[in-house]
Length: 212
Image 1 (cartoon, one colour):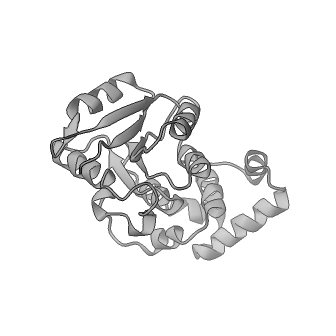
Image 2 (image 1 turned 120 degrees about the vertical axis):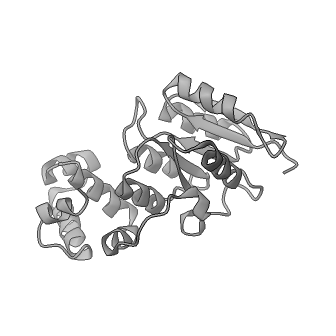
Image 3 (image 1 turned 60 degrees about the horizontal axis):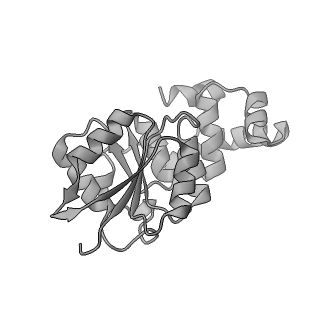
């Protein structure tokens, strides 16, 4: 790699950002230029203002956004960005959903040094910001998981279905989902019904139990 990779690190804990920068100032004798943001809105604005950002490490829980909504909003603003989720959670559903939403990787904060190094090297390979999307992302960037027919079906869902599934699994009622998504109550009911059909389950409670 002849160029200097620029990585946007988005995490609201300063000690985490300091630790990552101190641990990985360079890879393969090439210096990494770390750019920092401590909230989602700043990250979106920085990515728009800074040229040639190679990759983004995005924490899931930020002061202005919780969960996968942050990934969804960042990619809505910058659909060609190479975004890897950077999180302490190892929940299989969250990992698969992040991939389905368009993340190019899922980097666990608890990774041992060699795993973190491999993930960063895969993220900053030349070729850029738009040539690798989730379906073809390097297997190094996602933890190995056993095959599951339920999770395979989740991976085939569209972004809006995934958003509503996430809200259902968090315990939201149809009315609350309607308010959060600004969809009509009837439309929300149709989405929930289609989720039941897609996941081959009998009821809302049955669907929730699959991911516990």
